[in-house]
Image 1: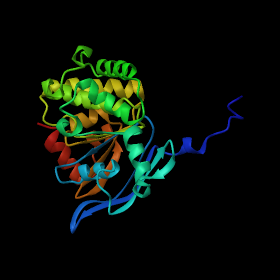
Image 2: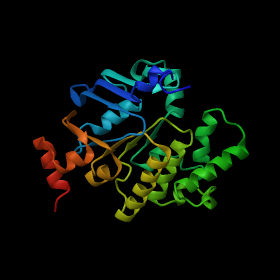
Image 3: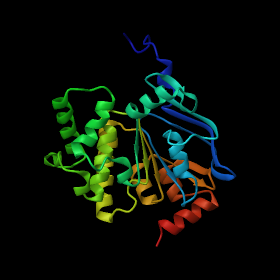
Image 4: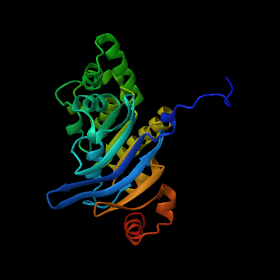
Amino acid sequence: MSNRHKKINPREKMPLLRVQNLSKFYGQTLGCHEVNFELDKGEVIGIVGESGSGKSTLLKCLAGKIPPTNGSVFFNSDQGFLDLCHTEEAVLRKIMRSQTGFVTQNSVEGLRMNISAGGNIGERLLANGMRNYSQIRKIAEGWLETVEIDSARMDDLPTTFSGGMQQRLQIAANLVTDPKIILMDEPTSGLDVSVQAKLIDVLKKLVNSLNLSMILVTHDLAVARLLSHRLHVMKDGKIVESGLSDQILDDPREPYTQLLVSSILKP
């Protein structure tokens, strides 16, 4: 069939994620307020700002970790274009354990430290109905190698891994179900510079080879430049500037962004 006569699936024209007027209040305290943006397939968006700017609150709302006060998060899921803020709990759980991934800043929160590295990867497969244990083990071995962990460490506990290895294991455990989107909360925070470089290199390879769609929350603008296509700068719970990563970091328009860039990127 020629391209001229090929039918277009309307869902293919939709973004992978559409965030509309998303707000979160903790009583009278503002978490984030009227946030709007879209994420396309294969795109990496960085969300940057100082501590307390609302970026982690926003990410947790997107991940279903906390309910927003107002707004919508539309996701182009296998079940259709759904508002995750108003989706049945059972459907939401299924989506979150198969079609999305969440990598935490502290790997202890994202891994089961009392089961093996292979078990951490295989657990997500088990949750999605796979029961062939030899196949699960083979898949887990493959993912360890993909994130550059020796597959001989398959039966070792995460407690025996370095901080950088734990983060890479957490990434493998999330990617094993081929999710549509990965949400990452300060994945390089607290790591030594050389360990950060290794993790960033692995992430860049995964983004390119898997056409990953990712939302990356970070306070590190250098990390944001290396990994993200576009940036959203947050201040006081709101997005104050958006654009291509290099454009924002090289020529910021907003005074807050100018201050952020000058204080962090320049000596």
